[in-house]
Structure formats: C-alpha cells, structure tokens
Length: 526
Image (cartoon, rainbow, N blue to C red):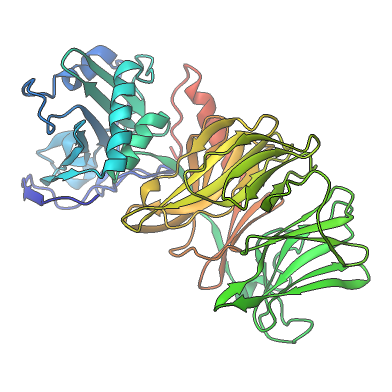
C-alpha cells in the first residue's frame, strides 16, 4: 500500500530476539523466535466479553468528515504463543509473542495502518484510495453494515483471529472471523486497501530435484502443459530441446507437442509419425506460436489457438485445414470447448466473451471478466469452467481474476481470491483436482515479493485453502502440471518441485470438516 508518510517508535521491553511462530503448517503469519505454543486454557473463553473491547465506537464526531473511520480490520498474530520458559524471565509476559495490526478505512477513501509489536508501535498513512477502489470500498462498507457475514458467536482458535468493526452514525457491527476462512467481502477489503497481513493458508513444502538428477524421461509425455526435458530434438538434434504436450486425442492415438529451442513448432503425431507441423513465426517482431490444442470427441478434428485472434482447424486424417465445425460461433476469434464439446467459451472479434451451447448453436450468457481473457479450464465432468483474466489499471498495475461459472447455464458462481490479489503479476492456467472440488493456479505468494506458490482453492466456497511453496520467479506458461497424483513445478534454475496432491488435499479436507463441527479446531503440525 502506498502511504503519505510512515512513522514508528520503539518500546524497549527487554526482548533479545524476534519471536517465531510454532511449527504449524499455516503460512501468512508473523515469525517469532523464542516462543512456544501456549498451554490450552482450562476454561473456555466467553465470546461476548472477548469481543467487547472491539465494539467501542471509532468515530470521534458526527460531522461527516471524510477522514472519520467507518471500518476497521484488526489482525491478531501470536496470541496462540507464549515465551519459551527456558529462555529466561520476560517482563512482557505473553505479549512478547504477539502482534496486532489494525487497518482503518473511511467511506471517503482514506486508509491508515497501526501495528503494535513487542518492540515498537508503527503506523502508516493516511493515504487515499483511487476512485475505482473508492467506489468498491463504499459499497463494501454499506453491505457489511447491513449484512455482515455471521461469525455464529464462536471464537476462532488463537493465532487465527481477525476482527471486523464497521459503523455509521446509528449502528455498530463487530464480528470475529477465522483467518483461514475469511468471508469473501472481508477478503476483498483487505485486497483493495493493500493490506500486508490477514489471510492464512496451509503451506505445503516440496521435494526438490535438479534437472541432472531426474533422468530421461523425467516427466511422462502424457502430462499436459508442462515442459519435458529431452537429450535432443529428434529433428534438429539440438541439446536440451524441451517439449510440452498440448493435447492427447480421446482415442489415445495422437499427440500434439510443442517443441522449443532451435526449431520451435507444434507437431501432430500418431503411431506412424508426424502428420502435421505448425512452425512458430513472427509478425512485426511479435512472436506467434500455438498456445492451445483441442481434439473433437471422435478425434477427427483438431482446433488450435495461438496468440493471434484466430481459430485454426485441421482434419486429423488428412492434415488439411478446415474452415469451421458445426456449432461454433461464426464471429469467434477464439474458442475453448469442454471435453465433450457440448459447451464452450467463445471470444468474439468484438472482444465480447460468451458462454456457448454448441449443440443448440447459441449463446448462453455474456461473461463479465473485468479484463481480457487469459485462459479457460473445464472441470473433469464439464459441469464447471474457470476463467482467468487480467485488466491493466491506469497506474500500469494489473488486476488478475480467477472466476468460476456453471457450464450448463453460463451463470457466474464465485471468484477465487488469491492472497494479495492486488499485487499479482501473473496467474497460470487454472487446473482442476478431486473431481472439480478444488482449483489450482500459480500466483504470487507474498506482498512486495516473497516468491510464488501454486494456490489451491475450494471451488465450492471460493476459499483459499493452501499453497504449494514454489519458486522466486514464475513467468513460464509451461512450468506447472499435474502427473496423476503429483503436482509438478519447474523453477528458473532447472529444479523440479514435486508434491503429493492426495496428502495435501487430505489435510485440507480435515481442516474443512473441523469448520462444520463442534470438535477441537484443526491445528496442523501440532
């Protein structure tokens, strides 16, 4: 978040080190050394008495001044920790391990931050939101005041609490939410104001292998969308000629392969060899290459898309070009079909994006992407489709979105919000897992840097549930793929990161079940 000024002053309380969080799998928390998990309290906390201090009015007057606070979000860190008793006497008690960050927002668009740590009080702001974000914040404040998401008067576990306070001249609303299950409108506020703390997600560490250790082939050619290293290009004999499989025909007889390095091209092959080759080329210094490949269900036709607004269709028996196929919209410059080709997403020459019914040969609905379409992915049973999009903002930043629609109706369902989505500089092709229950995509993991992760959302709730910690850089569109039960990710230094997806999803499922029960809250890593 850009601020008009920044101030801080230290409160010396005898700490000798920064506190470290316990050995949890949650990411997004403030690290603390010299702290250990706090002993469980014998008596359950009282919701009303705990939340009462946060219910005090924020407004100092009723003048309508645009700098008056209308909403605050308080993020609590380290309240699940206590000083390590072996480290010596601490005058600050449990506060040695705690940090409280409060984001204050007015309906006039001013934002400020106050952070209290064991060693300092820091602040930032006030700053002013641009008009576009201001309109969104004003609507969110009004909506949260009228219909705040229910917290069911239940306190989340220590270490995962976020407090919402919103008010006007007549009404005050206070709620406390689980930072691992933040309601969508509250998450949106955090994003719009540029908050640097808030959401938590499970962090899954990879096993790492460098390219020399992998052997050949290291990745099966049946894995779609990720680079596969080879000793040489079978045509040019060039060393380290990576390929990527773009599509495999439904009958398993044909493969579409992207070749990189000295002779970049896309090749259609069957068991007898090459049937079609489409070379990369340039137009006015712009590199043109195939980006997507789709077979019809009978494997008879192949549809190719490139970074040009055009559709290319080929007869797989003859390798010859075909003008169109039954059911495709005549005005489409790009088309992303479901695997059964009953539905699809069409990008028209006018720029409009539509959900399309191929069998009925008609539009189902216009898709509001809030930007330009990047990629489309249908769930395994074709009941849902996800679209990633990007919008260039007036300040030259980019806003990336990942949204899910119902395939049969074209109805928008929900958005998958990444951490710090306001600062994303890329979002990879969405990938489905567990029969459409979860959605994965490569995104930035931290504010102002912090590397990247393959995020995993619950597609039914839209909640970010986990992140597969990945590389410091992520700009290769062929860097991520799923190989049966493995998630794979290439890094710039030619290391391959590998995760076991069922293990990660099992932990996420266990956590989600704890949200809907009266059992002890799920505390990973303890």
